[in-house]
Image 1 (tube, rainbow, N blue to C red):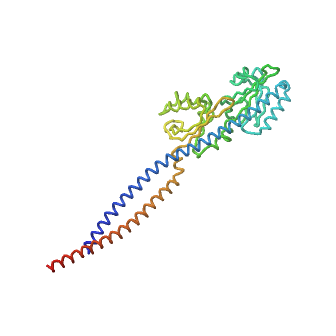
Image 2: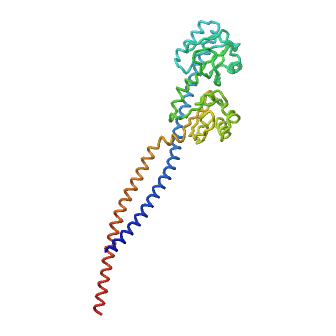
Image 3: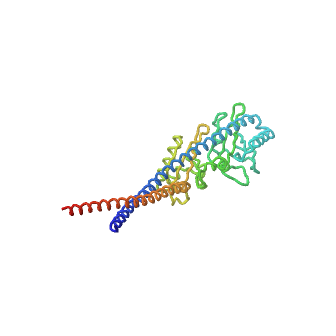
Length: 365
């Protein structure tokens, strides 16, 4: 009986060891397969979510630009007969600023046909030097050849209207005509920092997410790296910022800006000024249509941090898998011991019966 018990114990031990090894291999496979698949699925979901936010952000900026454009065109028509009446002109500009009551618009200014500022109004305490000249600005050169009601949205510049806290502005300008003749330009400076606060920061999926806004020429309108604002992003990547993949990113950005389509990409690029560290980023982008021209809005989130954000959920799923495996293993041990012991007793009784029968035959003989 002891020999039988030892045999059962040995067989049970070998069976349980094999079952345990298979179970560990199964858990390891499930962990690796599920973890890899989960990371891939998570990346896709983050990209989908960012595409929705980038698209909605682009549409919000478009709505703001259209509303501002309509107001600027209406104001230009209202003041075209009052350029010589300083008091009436000033009141019209003050009313415009008061009605908007928004920090996104720094104010409004009017220059005559020679490019001399003749009147301005601002929500801030600001001053202007007499006969300040803006004739060298690209929007003034454009206005001299533009048609009534057309709008020019320029690249970031520093305003020549002096105020305490200067920031970069994007001038929205339209020509002023009197009796069919060009008589000046009306320009509304849009604050880059304020439009960022109002329309871009809410688009972040995580605190570490980055927002970029590029003009149709590749000029950086907004970037988490302030030193890039106002520079041509594509030219800088091709000529001044050599790092692994710089050419690809430059070509990709130029292609997508030209296509004017929204989309997503999983890509690595430097997030620090020294360009020494490449960070894998999940990026969604969407075009911003303004008056037939386009900007490109992009939202990027570090892939590692996005996955870390969901890590507790993955850990819970893995915990359930391991707990289920342990429960299965526990019941396998009990079942193996029970059926192994039962099988041993049956064999023992069978062997005893055979011995008895053999002994009986011998006696009869």
